[in-house]
Image (cartoon, rainbow, N blue to C red; front, side, top):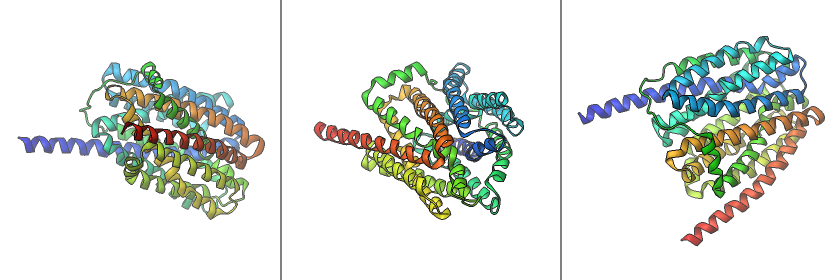
Length: 398
């Protein structure tokens, strides 16, 4: 009976792992093409500042949508069902993306997208931890990184000899097709979800009374704000430097390969040196990365620089998850995760998107990377000082 029970448990875990991995892989493969969506909008008459503004405002919609969907999941006692419904509604909106051009219609589509399709990954993260444990999170999430990177490589191959504007024109269609496959994957989830308390946003914000979390969330939000030139204007940077059409895709593919590697093996670094030290190193490397991007003028040089993505994103994510594991009680871990997405990927991203768009419109894409390098250097200095204080406090306690 024990062996039978263990077999059923193993089969159940395998089914959850396979379906969650597929959902991450297809959804984040679709998300890769968000790199090209800003360039696509320029081709239909938008300015960089307008692009930054619409992305910034849409991100604020996501800040509201994420805790709203979490609350609905709690009241219906089914995170899986909410993910299925939200991802499906999002895909219906994705198919409108290739056909909208007027300002009001683009804003409407973005509001709907960021309220649905761009809001369900936090629920998937929570579901992964609940069903498979925090130790498996990095391995499962790595499938999403792999999907993102594979599509970047595929596009680099397809875009050889093509102009950036031509490649950008493909983006809305790729997003719609891959997003659909991701939504289909959610409908294959097993019907045996483990129910736990859903995130509570007011409770999540009360966690900031803890000094350790207040410091970390502030630094993490600024760190993520500095990522937005890369997320929005990498194609513009390559185009302004007269680089080949395959450069952005290959650059992202190389970066994601490094990210997958760090997500797979980086946990031991965090355990050995501590999350504060790893984040400080991540911030310092990020500042260097953006400074190098701002001055890079050769195709392969820009591609090679993206190897640092494993540290700037992968190590950052692992260190942040470790801090949340340590500082947030298990009973309110969902609330801690909600605060992370709202304050870091929500507010931080919104500020970064709007600022980067304004900078790129007035001074060019390289300038937005240069300013990001300066902001990140300030983050690194504070992070180093904070990590030192944590180390000294730990020594005093011993």
